Length: 293
Image (cartoon, rainbow, N blue to C red):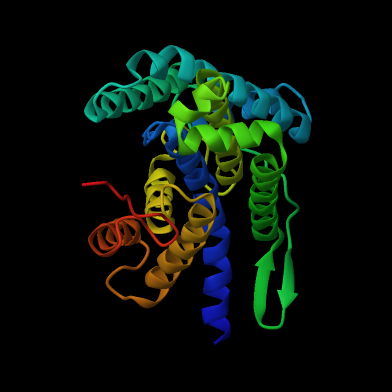
């Protein structure tokens, strides 16, 4: 039983990272209806920015604040320069644009920082908390705490600020929001900036646990897609719950399903995506699309 609980704790730590990137995917989808395949690469690029600042001698937390600001501005610029020209284009066109952005950002990171693996500092202390027979690393507690903090800040933004109210209005009905004086274009740019900022948090959390190199977020993006699909692409809460469920499912499958082990764990999120699309396409917390006849 203790081993089972230990696997759940480990899965929750991994799931929190998946949840943070899934949250970024959901934010962009809510505001624009776009599934951003480059979200993981944007998070990776932001992580490199943080690494550069820390390597230059800056304290980690100051580097993180600057990175989040850079990520926010960068996300807004991408919406203005890359996404805005294809606004209203067929879905396939937008998919190709985001895939092209994926390739461009990945290549740019490799060109600037090379493809050599780099160490990234862990912001959380070493050691662990002993809870009976279960060991909880301080790193795991830190990751869960950061994701909870991000969720709380987003809740306050959307529920208790004028900007958040405007963003919710644009996400619900852009045409009506424009009629009441909301600057829809500016709000969409804010949405991209916010998603890029949340994605940067995901990159900074995952880099100390894996490694820092241009392809580090490829696997995490698959898990994040599974989390967003399971929770529902129109539900931020669903993205977090989905991330935690995917993390626990992956860990338990790797530990207790013999033919999966550590080599085939990547198949778990793919199976989750397939099952959700077949059984409940809108996800656990999503709303089914209703069209008038």
